[in-house]
Length: 211
Ligand SMILES: [Zn+2]
Ligand SMILES: [Zn+2]
Image 1 (cartoon, rainbow, N blue to C red):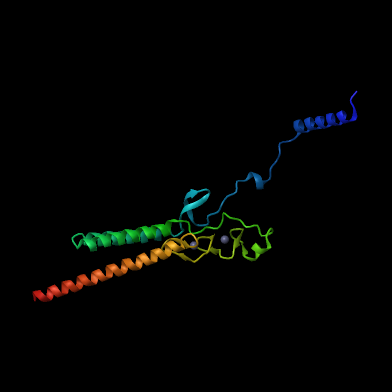
Image 2 (cartoon, rainbow, N blue to C red):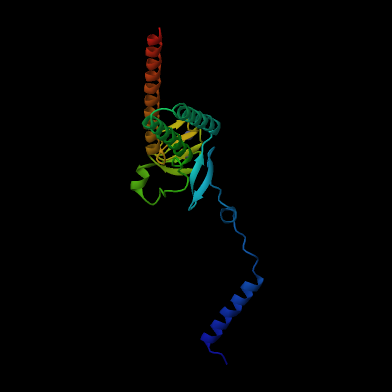
């Protein structure tokens, strides 16, 4: 004879056996079964680190290629023109030209701050909700500093502007590198302009002496 407790546990065991053997396979809804796709707008992520893109090419990549080729050709031209010049002038041209190309490449290639990874839960924190807004395109709650770029079609953290010459946005991820590139460009232009003017002046004075 089974006492009440034993009988109860037996019933539970039977129920469990019955349930597991006869149960239909669980049907998961789309929320679980569909792989979550992460949108990158019109940007093209090339390399990833821990799920976030490190190298991103923007939607205006043909302009990026054209601008890079222009900087590269100008740099190479100035270097070749100054091979026979004073070593100080030659090496300064070499360093300034390489610096110009590399600083441009860094701005145009690194992630400008694509904001589709971190999701802020507006319901949980009232304080957070005051500093956030909802992007209807990305369908994400974003911080106040984040803006949706129409050209890239994605939200960018601390959006500064969309720069077609680098092919993409300037934001949290590449703003410092962008300022460095601007300074590099000014140095590159002033240095080469001064040397060209000096060269013209030198040739003029030589021509006068020959007359
Ligand atoms: Zn957005
Ligand atoms: Zn953009």
